[in-house]
Image 1 (cartoon, rainbow over the protein chains, first blue to last red):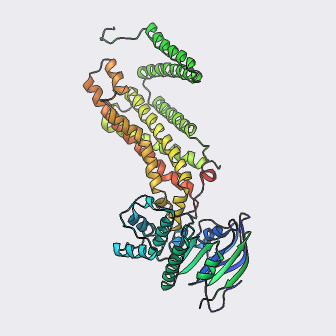
Image 2 (image 1 turned 180 degrees about the horizontal axis):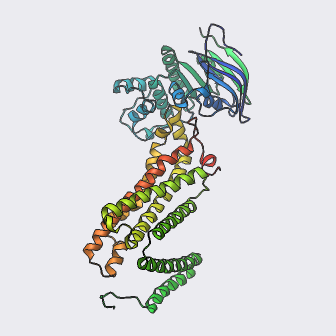
Image 3 (image 1 turned 135 degrees about the horizontal axis):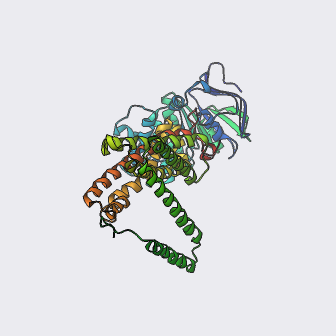
Length: 224
Length: 269
């Protein structure tokens, strides 16, 4: 369960246990690649993402981010590089612009112009004005807004929990392709959780399958 | 009416006031609202507390003692802190109790000292006639404010859990992630004081002012005292709650900036 020698791992996990939900003996997730974590609901996929975001800590074992144990990295600093998007998108008070801005404000990054905001909305296929109230958006639109927010932050690592669960099939294809292309251009590592094997096969270069909290397979998925 | 023109309340008149409560009890019973016990208990408790307070005040006014005043102040603070613990809907852990104690103690002491030394004047600051009623009003209102703030903070940490965690996932510090909740807890705490200030003089005459006027003080002097004490109460409540919320939100996060549920924090020893 190791990545090829010429590729550096962005995360390495050794003997990681969490509350009887997850047990990972050894795992390496390759840098600058798109990795899918697949498995049935309750298999521990979201728990794994939260561990990588240091939103929770393992009971035992070590997680390394670029060869440094997570315990040695300040949580806030880590999360500004390794940004997570939850399955149920979090919408904050205010309009669409304020919701796009908030990620950059949280991570104390430079604030871009409205043109940049509009291009991100366009990338996720959200045809809305920046002044529109965000809480009035539908579930799928909120998910796309949350994706645009992460894209604006341009993190080194994206942790996306079921990023297209509220989208219909056509929109899902369009949005996921743009998200993956955007990540590739920025040389980001994208780690996304999905219950859909077909989606994993379509967009991921590496597929990690989890069952009952344990890894059952890691597949390299070569796209032509 | 006594020599100073003030109408003293005779014993039978006071009894008539109790008779009014008995009428209330009869109505409550007829309507099937099961609150007779709490009405009786609170009326008796209030009577006993005020009788004791009256004799303590008479003793203090006749035999002013700085140390006795300080002892009384600590007793008032202790009672207010303990009462705050009881008013919170969930059991509190030691850390949160400590924060409540020093917020209430610190906020009210600073406000009381400013009020007595600057507003009332340095010569009379330890006169029991000023010290005790003003301390009582500041501590009492701050106790109500901080109780509201704690309940709001704990409730919001539970209901807004996903939103706070969503902010943390993007690199927000615990302080930034809980900023809205802290602000709302502060609002909830000072709202009763603000509402009371807005209605004062139009909707109702405040208790302290009414008491002074009934005891023969000129309405103008009573109003000046009332304005000063209301500003003092606002300052004391705000100061107490500010100290509290800016310390208390940290209890809900661990050293790794991970959000803990209220069940894992405030109730855990």
